[in-house]
Image 1 (cartoon, helix red, strand yellow):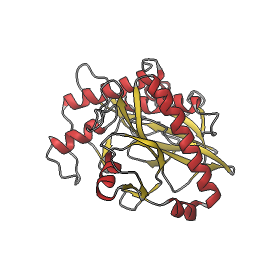
Image 2 (cartoon, helix red, strand yellow; image 1 turned 90 degrees about the horizontal axis):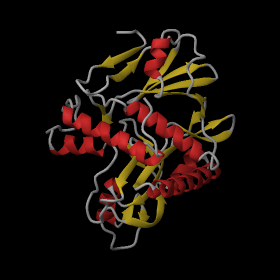
Image 3 (cartoon, helix red, strand yellow; image 1 turned 90 degrees about the vertical axis):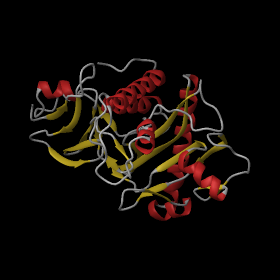
Image 4 (cartoon, one colour; image 1 turned 135 degrees about the vertical axis):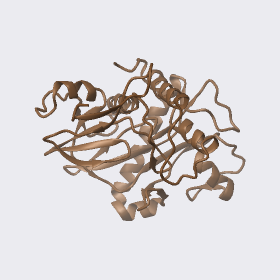
Length: 311
């Protein structure tokens, strides 16, 4: 096994998965649930592995091609939405990094990007266009979503009269904690909070219209922002199956939880079939769940971009 990356054999008819990277000569800044991040002095190298997480746990079974879908879809959106707000992306060309061998570059190609360094702002900018997930549960209990009152009569998965902005932050345990817009202003400053809110709603509106033309509903999503040389920029991943809820417009119906192109398929298996109580360690995924999840990620990419995932 090369020392630059760990590959897991996922079985016949499936490509091997990249589960972890180790790049000699580069400083590893952090290893998140999915991404490995390296320091390049004034820049960062971000590598999306094929790890998959659910319920705040990294599962022991990777999803082949997942990291490439996350990276390539983010790059598609960065390009499409660049006129709304700047982003941190610089290049996906790793050839200029002398510490990465040709063999490693071939494995990491398509799942890596070099970005500007930015100071992340401590708020996740969630936009909801449909009533689903925790928003639906919140509405059933209180008639509101994250403290925002809604009219009576909504059904599960119904489109909202207009998208709503529901900021959140990460608690020490890793769970998202919804906060009010007023609290967001206290944390990042009122002027910056308004810029982030307006940018998030505009990004969602433009992306949702694009996806709907291609038969996909973006029910909700989250954006992350940072400051680079004092400039507000869009960072991290953007409008991917990991950060968004994608539905097939052709089979969408109000009143039920629609099938999705994201990792909700994995969550549903964990909840309904695995018997797992959400306490580590997470169970291994059966082969059929790996195959179906990989197919969903790739199909979502193809439908949104109009192209097959590059080899």
